[in-house]
Length: 113
Length: 111
Image (tube, rainbow over all chains, first blue to last red; front, side):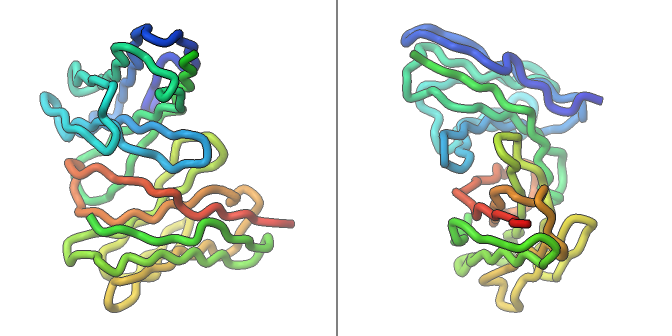
């Protein structure tokens, strides 16, 4: 039981390049989330998907797109990377109900030069 | 969702109780109080949550005031491994509602 798996774990991009961060969960959770964390800061929500087939913007959606490919997978795409998108990206998932327990992946460290 | 206020940092001696406060004076009746922590650069970890009543689990206790405007997370016997950033989040329950993390409280447990 892997939980939440993110790939890649590390990536270096040049300004203007595009890339997709992949996230998959094997817990049959309905909701999935993408956060970013900059040095010394808390996590900020980029996009989330409350259920398969739906996506919603979070606090900092500009420069990103998402796809909820199926119940297991939720990808985050940077179409034209900028240095301001250098960050650690965390994917999380959550089941129905009020428990509130988010399960996080190990993070993907992205550097944009 | 209600905003929360936490001290930016706290210290605690190993073996003592760590009491982390959180103010949420604008909390609504249907909003829960959630606590998470983040150790170093790992993904955050769920600790506990509550609505009105005090809650306890194997990790911690959550004390919510009667007016629900503040709460305290208690780690009864802090260890060095409890050094982390602790986030207090107030949000309506249900998986369709995303949790917004602030800057949290950086807890340092010292020998």
